[in-house]
Image (tube, rainbow, N blue to C red):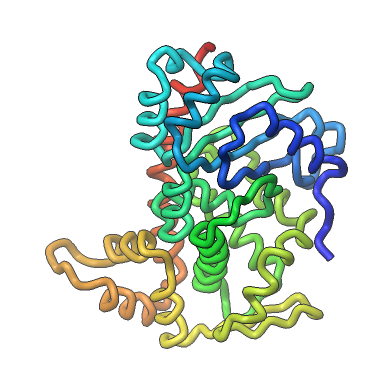
Length: 316
């Protein structure tokens, strides 16, 4: 059975959503204020800023309504209007617009707004791994409207995380080692993990939340043809043959495949992706190549998204 989130969070979080325009296709809360982390007391968790992401079908309309309801949440960009806010959201960084340090229901919250289309693209292709990476870890889903494409993309994102982790792990490993690898994907290349973030953050996320990770991934592990999952022992065995690794590489998200190709292929050769991935599958350092490619994706967009945050979180 999955462990509960911090007691009482569900009702309180859903009540907070009533302060925002309701045209949201997916809303979730995440972070240490929702799921316990090692070393954090309950009182500490209750004091932490609450983090939300709202996916919306029409960002211009949503920001228009939110400016009417919650104008004080926005930085000076509110004077430019909803079209310019949406342009900043979509064109820069990872396609997310954050309002931060917002008082709500006796808490301080931060919420990011992303278009549903941008979210689906990231989930399927790992274009930025910004929101897709957050959804590799347990989150508290508060709203999820019926959208077959979004539902499929959410599941595909989890499968992709498992495949990427397989390529970076040995032939046999524990469930905990798998979840540590998965939870660390979106932190690879994130400069915040070098400047200011707790270096043991990934371990602190996984250790007290194994039950939540099992709820996300046990079904995928049981159905995976290239893995032998032994839940009673907490062990996983995976096919590390060149053929097995090639199949795994071919099932990675498109952006990651392209990043691997750019990382491996020599300038001017311009080989197709399948040819390069076959070469990588035969390489003893296959896992390192995959890790470096993920590093490249995360590094690029963590920097640009954080730079954008300076403007969206400026003095209100």
